[in-house]
Image 1 (cartoon, rainbow, N blue to C red):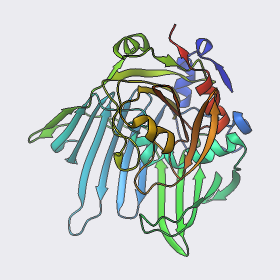
Image 2: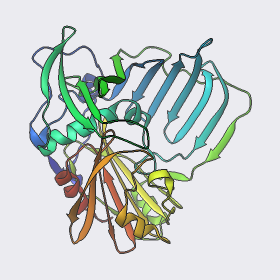
Image 3: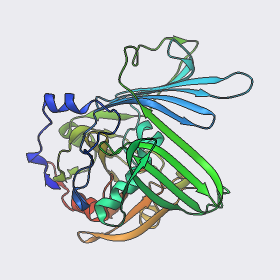
Length: 375
């Protein structure tokens, strides 16, 4: 499953074009591989569809070219409310209204776009429900079963939901139906006891003209700069106060999407109580809908101590299972939550490292232990 970064090659244009379509499940064509090699048989590079839950309808658009747009309608009596979130590279725009009339948007330039400093809309709103299951299959701790529903074939996965006093939620279970070739979640159902807590459905469709039509802004703009500057690996290395290192072994098919640096990372951990730390170097490798996010940063103040005893990816009211794992001579921590990418973090002296992606502990450790100084 893993190959040297130097030998990774980009998918051909023809293969990318063939992978764009996401339609109804095809009979006789399913996910490929078993165990560590498990993955989609169709590598999706463009995804469009409608995500619905009770009271909310979101039209979602995503491409591997760094474009994401969500147009959401909220069922609020007596008049529906609407919002648009648009991400183009490292610029994020959010506002109320419509694409043709976006009111007083919040615009963030040089936004954080790698974990744990930030996640993506695609992961948060859809793919994050698939990653714990896929990582579990790759690690041999979970299985998916083939089921029929509504005349279509899906891969079904389940996981337990822990009770959560913070969010006033009892324990329960989650059932996820994955598209059999792309592994995109088609339906996510949460049961808390005998009560239905969530019923999310996703209906894919083909791209249409106007999906990424230019935004038309009205009113004042709230503009800020988050300071996460995209750059080549070499330039990013030159901008931080330490010798940057990068993974040299990545899962097969993954290629560098972007890299960058920041003067300081964001406040991490549950409720953002970790200190910000020093310089940050980051990179992301992609293969279709999947990404491997990597960061390294300088410890400052009490950040190193927090790194050793708590989860920098942790969120308020979040639930995750964490285990210690050796990364070379360092003691790291591997965590899998109920939603989102599994993650591994460790510390070597005054440098703090993270790597995340839909992979098992052993697979993320392979990436982590391949970290070497830039040539």
